[in-house]
Length: 247
Image (cartoon, rainbow, N blue to C red; front, top):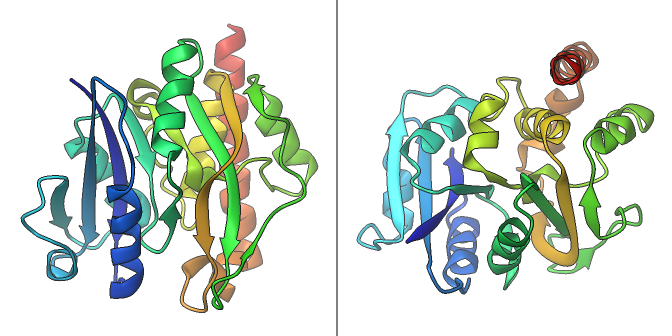
């Protein structure tokens, strides 16, 4: 049986939002020969995830550890995950129906493609949604395309890293989620996009919740000194990987 692992890092979650994330995973339909697991890893040891979610659901693999931040928490979940394919889901976001099936379809049908992403809608506090106007054309994204766009557009990606589904060996090859604050998924995607072609699906795969409590909405996320440092490091790693590839 093949396994796709959805990884969620937990820290001080909103109970209603976390249950919505759970419901969106439960609504996924798996193709024949595939199994789904949800690897829930708390950044800390309060046990809050088990309190909010159904602790006896075999779909969920709970874990915890000392408080280390989101990137390390995701990587600890990766160490426990059984899947050959790995997908991230933030604790406050919602998967759309069919997205896991589509991710698997792309990666099974295109053995040289290492990662997939999909279209995103912002989920606003009033329940309405808002789309983007700069999604790339659906289909294959060759190595270097993501990096070039990211550099040209002031470190803004052409695809949303929260929608990533990656082959496990590719994710581990780039070190999992990059140990930088607030941009660990960007670091992982940029690195993966250097080593392997990717794929963009035009169907909406995620509702990205916009709310006052989200970490990326805070001023610390865009504080210039830290922002420039982590963008510089992500860029430097991409350059190193590209140079190694040419050798």
